[in-house]
Image 1: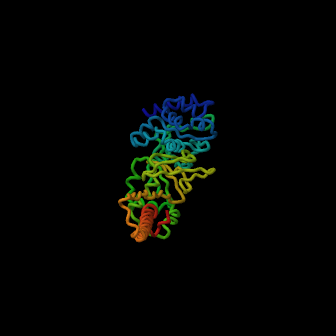
Image 2: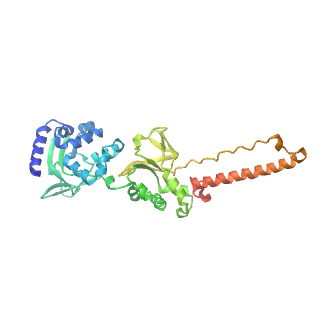
Image 3: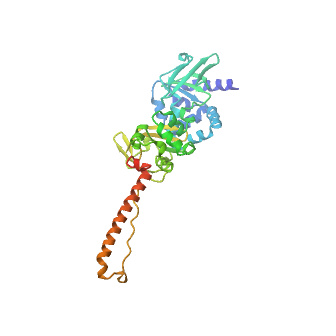
Length: 356
């Protein structure tokens, strides 16, 4: 049955390929309707039709059906606008710059896909395989701007099997962030479906923030508050960031974004690396720990004295002196309360009150 299907698909592809682009060829064959729908949804049709000299490993409809069975959430998410960057990444993982006919494939050959991840090709007596589990079922369908190889499984880039926490763990520049996420008990939350956008401070950012303090000595509730201030519900890629954009964090306070040329900032932090994809959202690496806003206590109104409350003139001087002393006490108390609140919210303790 599989052989017969291959022969039919091959005949149709060859029949339609002369003088047509890769997109034309795929669009002309119903066996690739799911792939074409995703290409159109991702707004990649014009790019794939106009880019010269490319190789496309094209999954069949059956390949997408198999992925939907194995990873239903992934396929369901790919159909949502919010996940467009992830969809573009999946499709780009099936495209290689340069034409690679079957005759040029060697066993163990490694090719770099357009999403900058590697594809490993295997060639043996059974045929050609991509990443070991996706077989080329029809090879060398020529188009005007490249070559198509039909495959029986969808190629999945690394983000499909990695959560936001996994991505952070894999980065040598985010070790302090990972340690604090673990200490604050946020691993399960940041590994849940989300989706989330995380602004991840580097180790150097935490060095400046902690100012010599031991991370293990920090108040856990304060750690959780500051970390969730770096998390926004939903997926916001670099392309979604506009000057003046405001987003509400999981912690409840807002982040403000600004653009200066090609540099994007969130509050006072610069986004140093953007669009690190995960199966539950996206990560942007930042160079500074974000400062949580500090709210001053609301002022209280002094009681209004009535004539009956006025003291005799003989005691006014004494009372004024007492009032001054009370004012001093109130002022000192206010400053102490405000400093403590600031330390708790943004510094995890008086010793590092200025760090955030």
